[in-house]
Amino acid sequence: MQPIVAVICKKCGLRIWVPALVQGKQGICFHCGAPIVVPVVSADSSPGIQFKPGERVDDRYLILEIVGKGGMGYVFKAKDELLDETVALKFLHPNLLSTPRAAQLFIKEAQVARRLRHENIVAVHDVDWTNEGLLFLSMEFLEGQSLRNLIRKHRIERKYIPVRIAVEFTIQILKALEYAHRWVTHRDLKPENVMVVPGEKIKVLDFGLALAVEESVSQSSVGTSQKHVVGTYAYSAPEQKKKWPVDTRADLYSVGLILYELLSLRSPLDPYVPILQERTDVSPSLDKVLSKALAEDREDRWQTAREFREALEESFKSSYQEKTVHVITNSVKNTGVSTENMVFLEGGYFLMGNNAVKEEAPEEEVYVEPFWIDIYPVTVAEYRKYIEATGAPLPRYWYDPMLNGPDQPIVGISWFEASSYAKWAGKMLPSEKEWEFAARGKENRRYPWGNTPPDTLHCNFNGYLGMPSIVTMHEEGKTPEGIYDLAGNVYEWTRDYFLPYTIARSRPDTVPNPPLRAVRGGCWASKAEEVTTTARKGMFPETRINTIGFRCVIPVGKKH
Image (cartoon, rainbow, N blue to C red; front, side, top):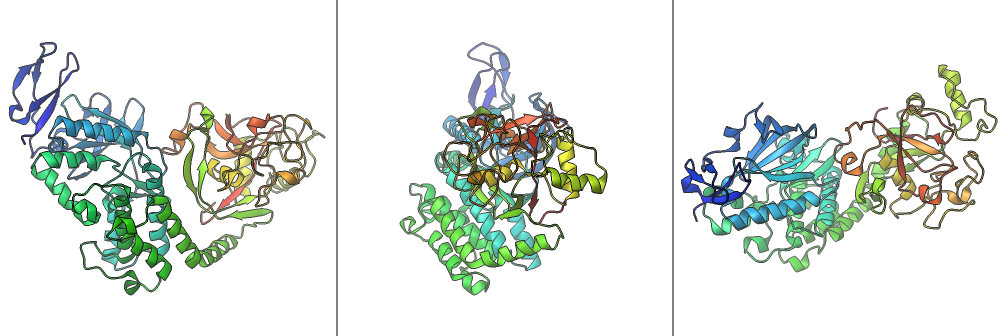
């Protein structure tokens, strides 16, 4: 079938589909009669020829550099001058859109991908056409490397990827699928479509785009499209290779192949060697989980991403957790920072946010690294030691007899003062994610103690005392891990800016205007709905009032 291209009338904005054989010729818009010129987009051309660093796309995007190209098209790093942020622009090769249906299907799938908001999925901001008729995606720009490059590096060095890393990366891929499979099947999972970004975090790319490519391939024999299918053959499930109907279990087979390659450094096209013959540090239970993922018959595989992920987590936990916890504990001891009056939280995935409240939405499953956290807010007595050691300025209410009891939380300090104390102590202010994990846990508690509504036995709220209480007063309000005062008493500074979660989770370095900092937990004057584990608000960092205190954390393995 002859490829077609899209032409956009500059006068009325109508998109017109024309055969590729009329490229470069002039015509008229059948809707408004304005003259149009069909752009030249041949099989050998590329957006890389048309867009160079310094050029603009549709008067909005400033091209900075080309960062990748492949069978699906070209990816550029660009500056979105409307939103003042760096983005990735993915231009689809025109030959992949050989029919109007293929283009419409691509746009439909891209719109689905645009709605996916998960920390392990690259954020798609927009899908649009250029004035020249090229279809492109605007996406979150990622710093890091693909799994393909990571595997290639280890092959060159002849050095295995640690089992922990391989398993944790796979778990993150499965978490992305667990979320996305409610709406879309990926169909094209492979190491090239998985990015490793700073912090050992995984981002999965190109959800749903393969479906549009398949549509194009089924109706066209254009070489580039066919090449794409051949290129991903190695990671396709048996039912994909047989052109049977595909469901989400095909993705799970692909994930199994990725895990096998991470562990063995062998391509799926190489002769298969059982992983237990390759490595002595892989447990039989992990091998069993992997073998089930690679079952030829999809009925014999893991049936859901969650089922696969939980089996993988259990296998890893039973085989490696004791050693990992030992290393984690020692790493904190070796820093010389005291963990007295702190509790260790192993971290992991948990549900963060609350869709019912605008400032707390969207609700999303996120991952938090292990960390230590103070079991109660920093007290007046503890802050006094800091002042005596450093000569730091006195807090605003230092001489107020209602607020300066040694076991009351310190108040009347700014975000900057709280940060300075934390640094002096060899610690940090918690991130919002760390704070909410400590309060909410993996059990998705509405309040730190559970789901029972607050009363005066659980926390200091609703003005019933009229001032902060001593930090260990509310035994009933502790978390199961023994952490006090995560509801009421005093708001607590976090180290994060107060941003909408849609921005905070995808672009955490964004500085809001004004540059508010997030506080959590409610205070002694707060209403019941303000002391939930998800409640949050923004405060100017210079604020020094009698309702804000803080506590500290030690993120494991990080320097302070």
